[in-house]
Length: 65
Image (tube, rainbow, N blue to C red; front, side):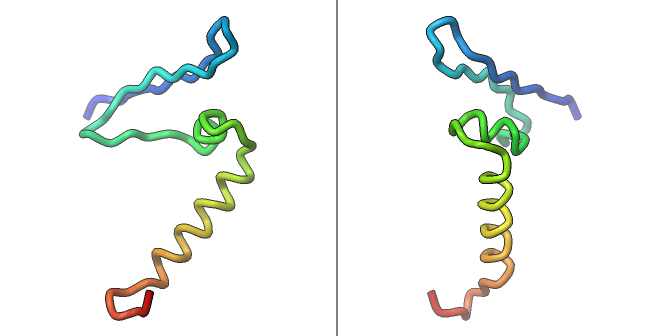
């Protein structure tokens, strides 16, 4: 399987730019890259992913929504 890389950089006008490579139609980003994309710090992304994982693990099709 071929590895892909994602590069995030700031353009001269200060806007965040992202060069993206896809692997099997899946986009992979590190927590640091996601934080840069959304203009926040990595701990906020870590917390969001932890909560999302906990919710997805506790939900079953028979669980009330």
